[in-house]
Length: 208
Image 1 (cartoon, one colour):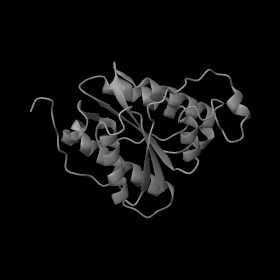
Image 2 (cartoon, rainbow, N blue to C red):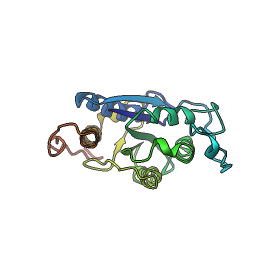
Image 3 (cartoon, rainbow, N blue to C red):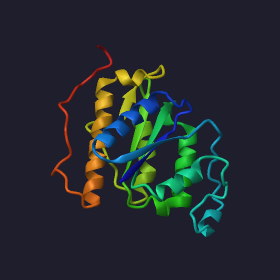
Image 4 (tube, rainbow, N blue to C red):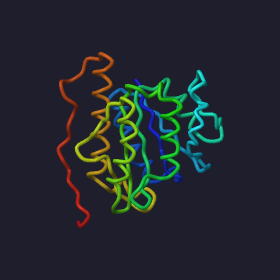
């Protein structure tokens, strides 16, 4: 079993990575392989609804290798689930993440159908829940079971690495990983517990 994690931040080691890396470490503890793929800093094209991808047997977008989209489509053919992470800009997901998500699902939907999906958003203070919802909606249209956590999959931080100080946010990421692992094991007929593992709740507020 393998989970593909997409780091949609232009900062390779920023707070989106911190959140995804916490998930990856917990997945490893659960015996599930993972890969964090960075979206990079190159421009990501938006879909122009040309429809040419529908004639490609390998589900590739006709924009070719101009950005990371086709690489994600190819990797999902060998992955069992996906977790898409994005920073929050003006209460929205990063534009390049939206462009990639729309094209990868439209062109390569066959590689995504029926596979569990989750979304992670990271912000300084507000807008994360709106961005979180926006990124979940396309997965819901592709027959992909959504994996949640003890709270919305959100972490907080501004400076690089600061999200690691969000105690509850990091626990939310680990709980997400446990839930994803449990679902994958059930889907693949692997013997596991009747319910995912749970940690004692560690709440954390903005004002400390």
